[in-house]
Length: 157
Length: 157
Length: 157
Image 1 (tube, one colour):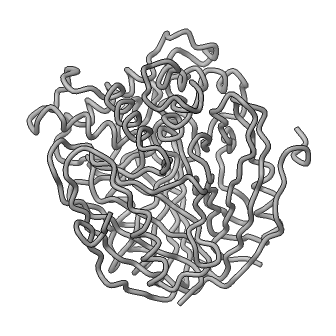
Image 2: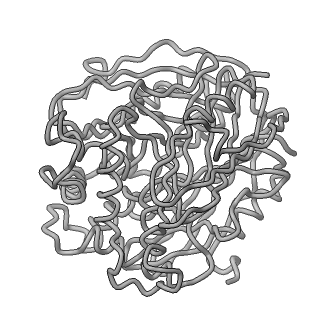
């Protein structure tokens, strides 16, 4: 397979790595659903003086998770939630059921999505595609307080 | 559980982190399927003069994704695609259907696989296992132009 | 959506990025199941003199994977394994079956979970939540020898 046919690459740009900036975000969820974190992460990147590098998001929970998904049509989020419900239904004979019927499905959904995201920062901006947003997914039925560690590693400041 | 019984670890090797190299790869897909990016990433690592650190791949789309999978038997890729089709079938009552029956399944498959990969680089080489290759997965039926940000953070150059 | 209502963020803390420490962990599994790597990773962080940054785990295999999950009730791990078995059952008409009925399901399960994890380190400690542990998941029926690359990038030593 000759990569020259259908794969192209820009020339590389290099800078010196010199800073790490960390922060903790707390999100109060209102129960099952998606919460768009994109603006908050963009603000963090700006406050950190980030120029080139990458930002990591790490969620400190096992019944809520992270994903990057389409930000245009809200019906996409409805369908993503339905898809997760089909893959990890309540009342499916789980042995771990002491914390309610929504708890074990929440763990499965967390395993199938992401606990951490890693997004490049170029020229001081998140290198997201035009339709991409960064979401926290609350998998539990009731509201929870969720903590996400943000960390930028790269050039800046 | 005594970790000494079945877990062993090499002594650590340390170097100074001093460089970030970024690049953008554009891939023209020919519709649903896997595209092996391993050689392109290895070339990037080489061009960047990377010695020790890690390379990140970040795909700027929500209907195509990334995975690391077996490179030996092509039938593995056929079965992986079948598995994704079963987990996110077309015509499953999705509410988001204006972009065609393959669109919402593509979003679900993206959520279940990876938007970013993070692969260590040791002694100037990707630390992949012998059977591992890096794949872009195109989830849409028709050809698309896909962008992937590459970024090396570590010692080199 | 006003982020000030339900999202709060601590002030950022910044340090200078100056070190990369890499190591290879070998784990002898006893067949299908979860192996808790948390203590081993904490030891690596300590040996590396890591203060602030992030540790990456990268598994060099396509039929074993990584996840961060609840460490409190062992029945959670039983149910997570059942969930993976339902999503990728044996004898589901896989075309790749020369390595045994458990091989292709192992590849699918690896694709649906993680090949790499990225966990922030703050004040010399893994920034895990109180219920989070780091697990290797062996998806093959028989024992295997698995290699995981550990890498800390950040300030320390």
